[in-house]
Image (cartoon, rainbow, N blue to C red; front, top):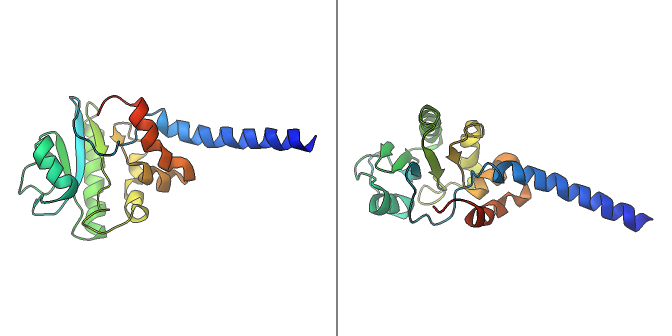
Length: 171
């Protein structure tokens, strides 16, 4: 009897976890790792510095692959969008808020946010992800799996990126 009840409770708890994950996964809003190409209407969102010196990491990839402009540290450029992350957390917050407003104004575009601020800038996902809280309700903004983990508080959210590789459109 107890074994049956335990299995039933365990099964129900798994449904709750899956429903939390499904809410994000079904929306298709998890940025894949290592983006090498984009479909029309997709925008690669990367961390930059105010001077637009796109020398490393995702910024260098944005120049090489997606039309980022060397010397432009913020905003839309080609098939990419720069968010300055090197001038401190308060400035990054303002830049993220400006990005979210821009994304709301352009629902025809899909913004694939990389792990901005978590590379050369030296922040962690726990520090940067909360800046994207207002993006949760913006359907054309995708976030990295570890940002989702922080924002939705689900330990399994790190699995989102592997799901997205299998289920999303080619990115």
